[in-house]
Length: 218
Image (cartoon, rainbow, N blue to C red; front, side):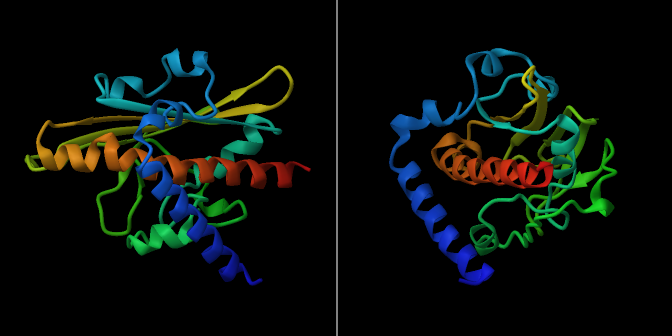
């Protein structure tokens, strides 16, 4: 099967997983901490103060058999027009994201700095790199445009690398969401729609990063 064919089949699987997550809100508490230990969920992490009073928080994590330095380059190049998001590319592009996932380290996208834009979608305002602490933390932040009262959604998305005594690295993704109480804001930023979609896409992302890093580490 061609790479395109594999991508389409994987995206169909991802679509089915999103559908299943949408109709199982009773599993949300489990999804919100997929892979994360109780300590990882409860600890304060870099970037938490960017969204100090979130309406809801997602913590996802995975163990990678590699050092922080080996994982970091894959995190540093995340973003639309950069390395992509290592997830279901065809699903992302159905929404017009314009994503091209890479399976290699892109040296031209390694020098991310505080203040740099990181796009999620080709046509929406980018997130901003608020914290860049190589090789332990990359925190992206997005806030509503000045004067935008229709939709108010503030988001911090932290990628945290914690090296373990056994030589592995924990990759923790923490996302914090705060939105207004209006219907449109709750629909766009609340957990009923955003959580199932984000969970399936992010779980795929973490698993692919693990595979790519461990492939190169070997």
